Every structure is written in structure tokens, then in C-alpha cells.
Length: 325
Ligand code: SF4
Ligand code: SF4
Image (cartoon, helix red, strand yellow):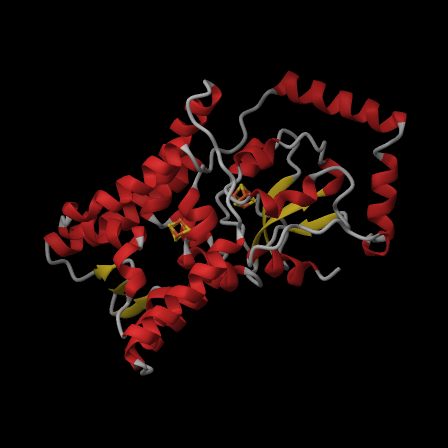
């Protein structure tokens, strides 16, 4: 099984596949066999006891992630209101220190709508693609997107309401996002308008924060209402073409979340907190085909799983370098 292709297949909406016996490496097979022995039960007991004894707090990535999103978005506001030409524009298209930046999906929509390859846009797209490839592709979602932040706050509330039985999480078909991606591209090409931009919560929220166009926030309120009561993280999980574009970019990124089968107790704490739990299917008992695996393309590098894992089986890694943390 080619893990990169499998990650891309899952990103397009396919369900994770159960590996065939021949997919397992010898080392992974031995580890899985060991995990069924009495020695492993003893090792688990010891690991849990040690964890409880030390109960040291894992590194709180969220304390860095939330301020990062706020600061990046505030830079646009300050620049616009005080005419500091540090950053100009909005998240969909901007100039930072004179360099053109363009959101990949918005740039695609513009070029399809105008049926023209615009040089400035192409420069912006290339800069953005290289930058986000380096830091992990969909890390744009977890570390920059303002909608991610508000949706994350709503998710916290949703989980509380769901625990009381006042909210539900109705699963949707993940292929919906791929369909929407094609539909919006076709609409831009066919109509000459960037139809997606009218409903993109990323663009709407970014422009509202910078230019004060709060009247356009009704759509965001509708999305958040649905996410609060009916479908957990609906937009980011099942719909957003921007997230999908960055997943493509991140598929081969050097910055990844890394899984260590030996340290994993398979209790599933990581999958409970993950925006895209299908990428953590390998953490289920018997599913990892290698002792060390980099998490698939859809991962946003939000680090929630790293914080949630009680035994340090998940960590950030830059390919080719030693583990960062
Ligand atoms: S999926 Fe879309 S809305 Fe969600 S965080 Fe990513 S870019 Fe933002
Ligand atoms: S795998 Fe971990 S880092 Fe990636 S999206 Fe899920 S919780 Fe976040």
C-alpha cells in the first residue's frame, strides 16, 4: 500500500482501507504480535501508571496557535487602518513586504473566471504554495484561517451541548468537498464570476475583520449554527475547497505529524479531538503497516492529537531532521 496515494485517496473522500496482510512490514507485524502478549499488558500497565504518577502537562500548542491566528489577521487590520504598508489586502489576496501572496483556490477561481493567466497572481500563488508546502500545507487552516478559530470555539460549545444530549453530530459524506471543489471551479469558468467567493467564510470573515463589512456575517452565523447543533465542524470537515487545495500542497510537505506504533496504546484519545479523524485511522489497533508513519495529507498540523496522546505516540517532525519535540 502506497501511503502517499492512500492519503490522497482519503483526502478526496474515500474511506480508509483495511490493509491487506502483505501491506505490513516485518517490523510492524512483530510489534502488532507483541501487543497481544502478556508482556505488552504489563508494559501498558506500567506506561499508564507512569503517566498518572508524573501527570506532566503536554506542550500546549493551542496557546501558540490561537494567538498566531489572531496576530496574522490583526496585521491586516492595523495595516489597513493605519496605512502601514507592511501587509495589504486580505487573506484571499495580499502583499506582504512587497511580495504578492494569493490564496491558491481564489487564484484558481479568478483565472478560471477571466480565462487568463495573470502574472501577478501566478507569482502570488507560487510564493504561497512554497511557503505552505514548507510548513505543512493545511497548516494554513489551523494556524491562519479566522474561520477555523471561531469554528473551533463553536466546536467546544458543541461538545458540551452534545454531552448533555442537546446537540448531534450528523456525519456527512466526505466526498461532498471534492464535488463542491469541481462545482465551484466549473461555475467560475462557466459564469465568469467567482461564485465561491460569495459564500467563502474565509474571505467573508477576513474582509469583515479588516474593512468592517459586518453585514455579510449572516452566512457565517448560519454555518456556525449548523455546526453548533447538527454537524460538528461541517464547513472545514466536509465542504471547504480552500482546505482541500492546501491538503494537496501538504501531501509531500517536509513538516508532518509523525506516528510511533510502539508508543501507541490504541485508546483513541487523538481521534476524539481531530478535525479529520480519518487521517488517524492508523492509530487503531492492528492498522499501522509500518512502525513509523507520517500522518496523511488532510492533517492541519493543529497539534490537538499531540496534546491529547497520553504516551507521546504522536509528535511533530521535519522530514530528514531529528524529531523537533
Ligand atoms: S477548511 Fe477552509 S474554512 Fe476551514 S480552516 Fe481550512 S481554509 Fe479555513
Ligand atoms: S492528525 Fe493531529 S495535527 Fe493533524 S489535524 Fe488531526 S489532530 Fe490536528
